[in-house]
Amino acid sequence: MTAKRALLVVGHGSTRRPDAARPTLELARVLGRRGGFDEAATAFWKQPPYLDTVRFRAPVTCVVPNFAGEGLFTRHRIPEALGLAGPETVLDDGRRVLYTRPPMAHPRLPVVLRERLDSVLAGPGIDPRETAVLVVGHGSRRTESAGDTAHRLAGALAPGFGTAVAAFLEQPPWVHDWRSLVGDRPHVVVVPLLMGEGMHGRDDLPPLFNLDPDALASADPVLGPVAAGGREVFYLRGPLPVETAADLALDMIGDGPTGAG
Image (cartoon, rainbow, N blue to C red; front, side):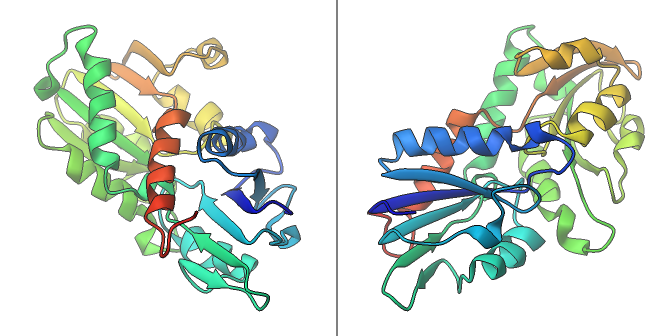
């Protein structure tokens, strides 16, 4: 990185799914354009360019983790891999590195997501009180706090909807039990907290909600409604459109310790 003001967006990546990098690449492109950065780059945990190859050369670099929430990676693994001491790190040569929270951890996320859910239901004229919101997280069998983001988001969304619950791929409550979790609500909106449609988004979740595999090849941001488990299900392709994620990221960059400019 040789620019005066640089951006680094960090993603998880995948050794098996090259398209897992797409959301991070798109966010870097949009942030680079809208944030006035001289240079925008990406780095990943699981695919090249790897985190351990990053060298900070700009006077100011903003690092944005593109993860579904705060957890082991954003709080420990990424800072440790990049040698960061906190929200602001001053290197030995005086260069500054600003480390933000992930866009999905922005305090305004519940409001932004609620607006998106309202828009999904408004088209067919569905009453939100007859609708269950199912927030699907990855979870972890090793870290108890891995589901905190999904649980907090479900709790924040609950008022105004019939119910809002969290479910997970790798910890209870399990997403394959979704029918019992949403109760008797006739309409369900599934919100996967997954940054990109990797193995889970393309292989694991769609069959649970009777989604046509061919529909995943489309660019539609919302799939459905489809009939599944005796309900009418809408499936969001991702928690946020890239432009909205960029709005939240830019807001947090601006709220950094001493600003990014």
